[in-house]
Length: 456
Image (cartoon, rainbow, N blue to C red; front, side):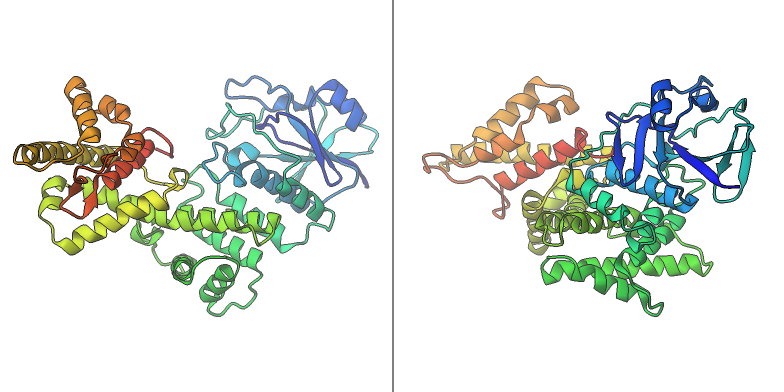
């Protein structure tokens, strides 16, 4: 029996526009679409795909092809679409693998009509009058219409690679990557995500030797990054530790919660960023420094942000900073500078909003303390340019709601006004080490994260 036609359905996606990639055409399920691309109308047949209210989903995307492909080829195509829609965004995607659920159908010339549904495990013949209902996963997001830029370098890159065939390590790495991006943590736990990510890196970087694979992968990874030696060393340490977690899991030992983290970040969050950047560098050419800089900021931003929040959210944090040893204060000051220079709130994975609020509260207490002490010093003859602290003091005196005060303190703008424009008065500093500008910049960055520029 010869397969004449195939079509693939993606019931839980809606595209802003439809397109072709390789010899595949992606179009909307309408009577006109079916007649144009397939020759017969299957809109009623697709009513088996229903929403959470068991109503047929309208306008399902359909993918058809001029030639026949294996199930693995179709799965690879979907994983490419998944990356083009979600992986090219280095912020946070609102779509997960559940939205990219697909089913492949074969149409046979058997004189009776009907189709065969194909998946990895079995082929099942179904009548064109099929009455079963296929319900979505509870994790499907119904409120998105993803945009796919067919003029992007990434789209053009994958379109060109598809013409070379699907037996390619890049495509296999995308299959593993897609398996890490399911929202259902019960069926897809972090340990399994670690294993799939490791397989994705091994495929992508083409490491075949099984001995010391973690170190080999780490060396191959950093060789593709245009970063300072110190940063490469840090990323290499992470990758080696990541593969050690995979080894523990693969050999049946228990993986503790502590082993699933690296420097206070989830291993799989770091792995996602690194994998995305490696793919984007391949799409755009390895010389694209913007992605290396993003990766550098990712490692620095998360570590520094968490250290600052940890310091400022402790009980009696202000008192501790007022009395701590100078070396500890210098370390805190260095973190403040790094937070300003290398900070990118899109890369922050911090999830405890209450801790950030406590950190912001500590900074407010420090501002109040500075204002009070410097005001007294002015009366003793010293003069300070108090404009930023005066503004903050005014907001706090007129606003009882702390969250509203946090929202109203425009710390970035105030940081520009930290020194006397006429240079007649002393600069405000905290314990003669940390300038008011650094404290205000820290407040501004914490406030941005607190107000929702990350995944809370």
